[in-house]
Structure formats: C-alpha cells, structure tokens
Amino acid sequence: MKLVSKEVVEKNGSGQVTLIPDEPEDMWHAYNLITAGDSLRSTTVRKVTQESSTGSSTSSRVRTMLTISVEDTDFDTQACVLRVKGRNIQENQYVKMGAYHTLDLELNRKFTLAKQVWDCIALDRIELACDVARTADVAAIVMQEGIAHVCLVTPSMTIVRAKIEHNIPRKRKGSCKQHDNAIVRFYDAVMQAVLRHINFEVVKCILVASPGFVKDQFCEYMFQQAVKQDNKVLLENKSKFIQVHASSGYKHALTEAMADPAVSARLADTKASGEVKALDAFYVMLQNEPDRAFYGIKQVEAANEVAAIEILLISDQLFRSSDIAQRKRYVALVEGVRESNGEVKIFSSLHVSGEQLTQLTGVAAILRFPMPDIEDDDDNSSSDDE
Image (tube, rainbow, N blue to C red):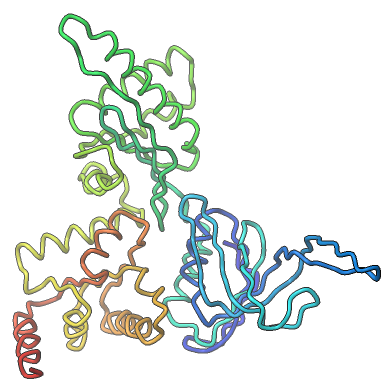
C-alpha cells in the first residue's frame, strides 16, 4: 500500500488519508480500515441514461469521482475484491445526493478515507499496510493421498491458491497399476500448481505437510521430475522445502505444521509464526496454569484493570464491529495493555490461528501472575443480580 497523503491531526482526532493499494493483500487492510460512518472518495463507473429532445433515451457508462458515507462493506477473500456500499454525500452531475452507490476498490486506484475518529487500531493498520518489508514470505502444500491445498501465508492472511483433488483407486491384490498411475497424475498436478502459484524469488520457505509418507513421496517425485526436465527453478530452491507432519491435507492442519520446532526456527521473523507461537503458549498456559490464561472480554478486562496482562491475543474481526461502542471497548483494552507495558498481538481472522482464536471469543490473555479470584467474582456478581 502506498501512502499518498495523511491529514490525521492526532490519535482520536478527525482527518483523512489517501492510499493506493498495489497488491491483493492491501484490499484486506482496506477492509479492516473502512467502517460504517466513514466517508470514502474514489473513482467509479456509473450507468447514466440520457433523454434526447425527440424523447428517445440512450444509456452509457461514465467514470466519475464519488464520495459516499459508508454503510456496508463486502470482501471477497478469493478474488481479493472489496465492495463498499453507501449514500452519495457530495454534489455530482451523474449521481443525486443521498443516492445509493457501491464503490469497487481496485488495485492501483487511489482512494481517500476520512474518519471522525482515528483510533490506535486504525493508525496501526495504516502503518502495517504501508510497511515495504512485508511480503508473502511463506508458502505451504498441505496434502494427503488424493487431496492437496497450495497456500500462501502473508503477514495478514492465508490464501488458498489451488485445491487439487484426484480420485485414487485402492490397491488391488496382484495389480497396483491403476493406483500408481493415479498417484503420479496427482503428484504432477500438485507440482504444476506449485510452479504456477509460488514466487520463489519472494518466498523464504515452502512447507510440505502431510500425514504418513505422502510428503516424502511427493518431494521425491517432484525433484526427480525437476532433474529430468532440467527445471532450474525447483532445483535451485530445493533447500527451501521443509517436510513436516500434519494430521490431514486440509487448510486447518497448517497450524500444526507451523508449530513444528524445525519450522519455527526458519520462520522466526514472520508475523504468522508469531501468532502461532502466541496461541500455542496460551494453550500450554491454559493447561498447566489456568489462573494465568483468560479468555472472554469480561475476564480479560478484569485482568487489565490491575495491569496483569503480559500478552493480549485479539482478533481483528472484533474491530470490524458495526457497534461503535463495542469497537471502542476493544480499542480501550488494547490501549490499556500497551500502557501497562503488555504485548498486544492482533490476529488476522484469515489465518488459521485467527480462526482458532475466534472460537475462543476472539480475545484471550496470558497473565503476569495468577488471578484465581476473577471467576469467583463473576459467579458472585451473577448470583447477586438474581
């Protein structure tokens, strides 16, 4: 994302920014920035009908600059397309004031976003989006016999670039030819997907994860074919492939693969790995010292009141709430933890680790010291209310 101009007075003040999204992931950042009540200005195409003096009408599509008051946003994760719906709030020769219009934000097309209040979460999101160092530096092939997913793991999202499904016949007594031929076709399809969707100049490592020996057999096949075909791209990047165990060939198994110690060492400087480590540490704490691992907004807020939070884990989905009071509540929690020198990890809801955190209410915390009395307090207050 390119920052063209920034007219934000200060945190919790009003202002506007002008941005140019230059890669698909930037649409995800824009989706997290734009909320109901904001004003958005961008070019758009509008169908205009004109009536001539003879009474005949002609319609044409014209490009115009439009400013809308945002009411709703829709993000297509596969196509990385963002649609923003709202009412026109500035005079325009083609669109009446108050008329509804949907702006399609596109790559390399400038847009200006104005907010009445820029909180710390929105300002952090701009900083993250405009960080030139961020790239899709991890790729993964999660597979089992007959099914594979080729994924790109960026700092903010996990994108499934290809899903390969092949029917693999069972081995028959005395004849394995059909099974073996099907396996070869399957491995070849996965290999082609790897070559098509993975940019080896950017990616630091490629995880090949599967149950059993599927990953070993696939890698052996792929590099044998690379030698036969003199595929220099694969041969030169052979050291980037890491084979790890996973329980299945589906996307959710990616968390297990990224938690593997061998993988963690290679991915030490990636945001996605940091999220997995933090969630893993929370689960370990929950099992071994449950009084130092809280989840749910009430318990986490109670811990924050006494500056007990060491690491806050929170899903970015919570900041997209249409309820302004709810959003402010989560923003206040983040600010409170930072003021008490706690660490805040904002999880992307498009990462597998973010999906798991969402199942735990979307907010959790690892505490500096045990707080066994909080649950008792909650129980007592609920019984007093009755």
